[in-house]
Length: 345
Image (cartoon, rainbow, N blue to C red; front, side):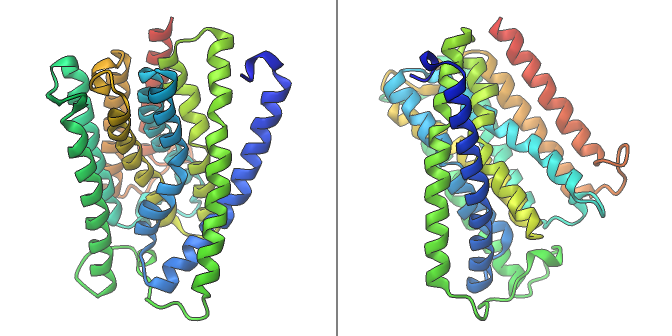
């Protein structure tokens, strides 16, 4: 639809949407931080449950429309898995912006839970992709889809229980930033919830409009939908996560920023399960191009690197910029993008 109007109009719309997401993202992070203080929630869980859900809704809208109306399963799969890789790569930016020391030395151990569940869910997707049409299914839905839904819900509950244990004084090692005293005094919760809802609506509207530019790009350049979904559209639809993450960092809420990115990955994998239900021609992952297995494996490797960083908590920086974990994340992202480009040619 946008492809016939030239590059000016899509470029202008892209800038306007990105600006709206940036402004609303800051308001969203401030509201979420105030709600965490008012309700005694940990910042890691707020990032995982509240912020990640809101910022990942564009991926959900894009994925469902791709399979239900466009009939492009590879676009939906590439967008969801590619978004996971982009989110993990953006942790490099978070690491570089922590000037005192690498972010892994300040991050809460709660993120180990989020990353661990991410490995399990991505591993299940990788197995389904590797098995192709041999994956068990019920009617047109792969049996992995209800398992992914269950794992996502368990992940939310486990992270909340872990942070509640921290707040209750249980002997769980965590950075002091992750602990907050319940019942933030002076916070108007009703007004804060309204502000959160308004900012979320702006992020959702602008973020959902962005993929139209990616679809126009695919039509104009003739690139495969697998490549556009994995690289370009994944980058576009993760702009809300980037904006909210940067806003959280401005507030000094590192755990909220990390929780948003790792939680968005869990939600992105959940999008595959929901898209499987909407795709009526058989299990969604059975229709995937072979290149998607490489993207899923890349996301697994990158999540594993994050877990290593959270356990080892490296102190040194490479070229005084970021930790060696971040170097590994960049290398994995570049390799995945190169393989996706080769597969598209």
